[in-house]
Image 1 (cartoon, rainbow, N blue to C red):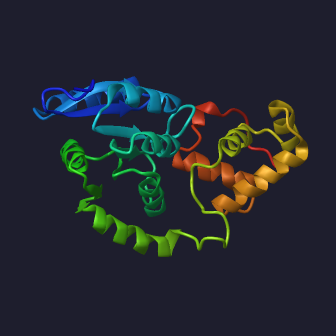
Image 2: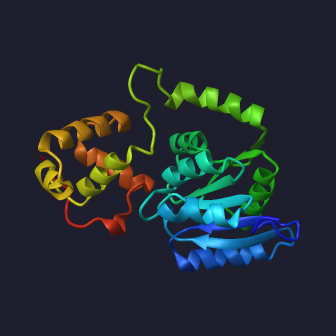
Length: 240
């Protein structure tokens, strides 16, 4: 029997960087006879290793995390541990982000004001292989139809341009964080030990992927969605 798969309960790992929130969520889940929290993670970069060790059936994942955001961590996790189901929680909720979360491998998506009853039922549903979006429970076949429909709103035609999707590449995310800290292209180049032109090339790619006009819009886009944490930024946004 793998660690985390005990007593016939649905084993859960909580991923969030706020101890108070983790404790509250643990208390809610552990009060259920069929659920058991087997571990907690506070950093996106630790998710894959910790989940590989604990082998939960479900991960409850915040999007706004240190090191790697929840979408990046989910994509890495599903590539390594496809049997683990992910319930995504976020303070920022819009239809486009729901689409990208499911594309990244999540099985459910909720704002953080979800009721305990909704979250508990979602964990049970995804542990059975279903998907939950809002109040709607879908089978794998139904989620494929949902994704096809949402693709018409938020997807892109392959080859037309790069998919508007997060995660960006690790280097692009690194550059985007420095943009949010107010560094100019030259300062980013110096900080990362790369050429000014390389930074410009990455910025062009970032703007194209996010479908925004300039670096300030890219920073606002990332901050609003929790891809970059506000507490990890300092200073004013720069224009250059």
